[in-house]
Image (tube, rainbow, N blue to C red):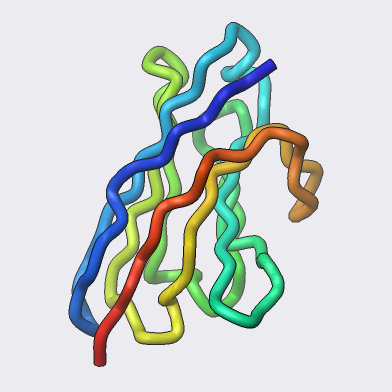
Length: 119
């Protein structure tokens, strides 16, 4: 079992930056691929970014590549999403997820954190 809690969302102007954090409980954190998903109003939840257990292999949704960076610290059971050059279309609730298979989510979700980008 893994429990996830996100933090760091908020309101930012277009072009600004935010850093999301996700803390995980459970001994198996370091073995999981960790990821981020987002859901905008009226839209399906979509994959954003992921990082494998080795702490350096990452992959991204095309529209965020080059603007977002995900990282993790296995010693602290933490995963991060640094979001730069934010756009209004990045507005969504962002969710941390554990045990991804490719871009398919695992069974473990955080409660979500709201990110709002104003134009």
